[in-house]
Amino acid sequence: MKQKLIPLLIFLLIASVLGVGLTLNPREVPSPLIGKPAPEFTAPTLYEPERTISRADLLGDVVAVNVFASWCVACRDEHPYIMALAQHYDVPVYGLNYKDTRQAATEWLAQMGNGYAGIIYDPAGKVGLDWGVYGVPETFILDRRGVIRYKRIGAIDARLLKDEILPLVRQLRAEAP
Amino acid sequence: MTRLLASILLLLPLVLHAAAPVYPFETPGQERRFHALTQELRCLVCQGESIASSNAELAADLRTEVHRLILAGKSDEEVVDFLVARYGDFVLFKPPVKASTYLLWFGPFALLLVGIGVLLGVVRQRRATPALSAEERALLDEEGRE
Image 1 (cartoon, one colour):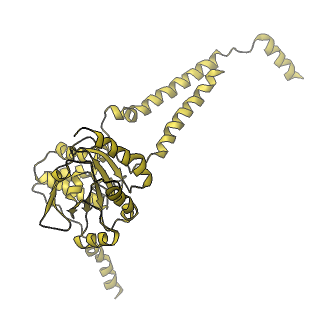
Image 2 (cartoon, chains in turn red, blue):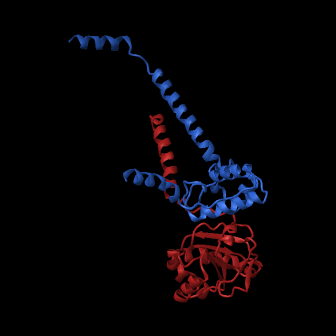
């Protein structure tokens, strides 16, 4: 009698594996940079073209790097949460203005509000390429030593802030420098 | 008149093709490598397409990058490593065989073996079922005659 159950059990095993597969999102490609130092870069800032910003500016504190653009619809949705992260939770957020124009980006920020500690101007996407950016928005969390510890593909929301980002920031801040 | 019109219409495709960016190379070997590589690399935005065929902006960016790397003298392996370092294994259409992908590569064969095992087990079980005894056969013959 028990032997007849074997095909059923095999079916259930396969069905559950495939069922889990259905819940996975192929767009969320895991980043190979997690656990690696953030890529080196030097780029002009958005507001002051003569000033440059580089990787060294991101060191010393737990920071977020938020990839955004004026043409990106989801960036509008996540903007209040980025602002909250920067202003309410005191996490320095650096913007990576990806494939945008100075004019469009500054206008967008004037309209939406600018909470960034600094903004990397990356019109050709060169910096983005080194960071493995393939969609906008994306958000990275770096520890004090500039190692990438987290990458979020897509907009952040209240749940992500509460369940993933803020606990991680707290944990990283508690780490020895 | 209609022949003139027809001739013009037939010639139009020659001028109406979308302006495709040209990737100039120094040798035909480089160009061949470019075509081969860009067909093996996945566009992360249009995930079923290669960066050779995808119209996504990222695909164009990655093609430009592959072009730059080839001109800079990088080998095929170096070009692939460059992109995998930034985008991960998913940028390859053919996943590498490593511990995390054993299930992907060998799973189907394992399932096939399990299926064959079940099949053999069922066939063996059927054969083991005893044939009708002489009495049962006699009973059936009687009922058949009635």
